[in-house]
Image 1 (cartoon, rainbow over the protein chains, first blue to last red):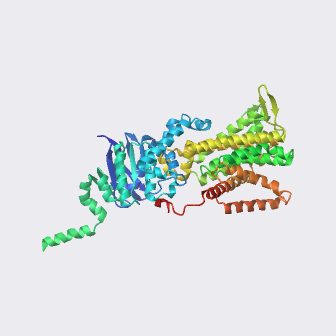
Image 2: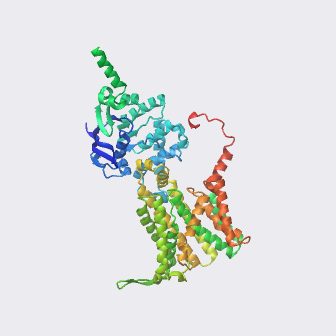
Image 3: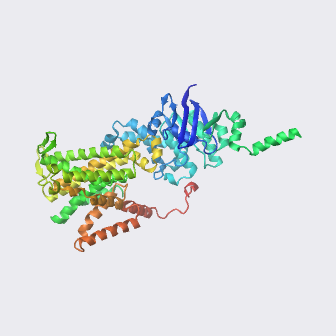
Length: 271
Length: 344
């Protein structure tokens, strides 16, 4: 197996605040990897570095061997690394269908020769038809076909996340970064979404996931990377992470129930 | 309705002079209104579709006017260092083309310069640019004659092989010239906005991060929009110069930019017909008011009309009316949608 994405000793500081300190891990092609950690651990910051929205103070991110350090977000997307966003995942004033049409920007670029002139001379007819067919297929695939002609901002929160996923998939990515995709979804929507993630992987797309829903993370991930205070504190398959003392401490904190439980065990032993 | 209205309006404007007879005052008002409306349409491409406010839009208009005038008048200027720039007069249509290209080039420079920062910075850069260009027009007397104005600008001459040559001197000819250029600009904007380029602009306006994340190049998209917008404003300026046949640095008046912004905002920014409707209303309002009141009072009414329009239809006339129409058509409205997801 070869690493499709390598995060190499990345550090990000905002003034005196260290958001990420020396983060280093790989994602193998075809994997589903989750990036977890308590609030403020640096997960979204890491995503922003990987997708060019934030420049790291140190280190580099490599995607299929290409350094992403000096690339703007749109160029990184064109390399095949797509992402979704935590909160605003749609173009609110457009219909769901038009959202996906905007997302198909790159596919349109491949169809047009000289975009502006093609548009002016009306040569984009065939290309437009292909784009519309593709948009319909994508909406069908994520299960939003019935919502195609509704305004994106009128959709329920969980459905807006699906629009976000459809937009990311419209760029034909080799790897997809999902930022808290099931937050705001109910249990059944989450189950459907887990199935969708697996289907996306079956199409050959590698997935890196930031998520707070632990049962979902444990179910879907091949491997989990745990961050705390901008540092990697554990890495491994779900079973190992579940029992890792450092992870338990990070989530439950010192002086918490876990520690009290441990103390109680010790006391019992002494007695 | 959305498709028919522009065509009906065009047909109406084509036959309008027949109804007016040869009232030169009204024709003049229509021509100037038409030219300003082209300016408003070009401004709308930036303000309405990309969300960037160009408060120096008149600079592109004025550059178009001056480039066109100077190209067709010719000039002989001392550049210093013993260099002289001499230009023999070209036919006026050459000036028109050059004006469009020159204004578009300025749009490119302003776009490259300011779209890295966007928003308020773009507003400031465009205002400063317009002021600098006005000062150049005012003070480079050897080239522009400064406040003495460039006079005797030739009218546009159209020649079709085998059909003869026309010099567009009468108001009626100029009316149809402006109408033709305006219709062309409308068609270009409609094509741009309706396709992939328009979707990229909409995406950037609605959610920039998301637009970047699907591979839309913000700087390039906005720069192309600025170039096309500036080129159209330059074309309008050229029409203005060859119609009035005299221009002075007052073409760079800030108030003209404000008028264009009012036309766009009142008509409905981000719609194709908005600037046309707004342009016709606010361009012809002075004509309607002139017999009734003094010019100073007209400005007050102008302001009142704008306030009333935006109070009743905050998004402008065209979006307001089409919302009204679709509501009427959709009646009786469904009490409950079948789908619980949309009832938020």
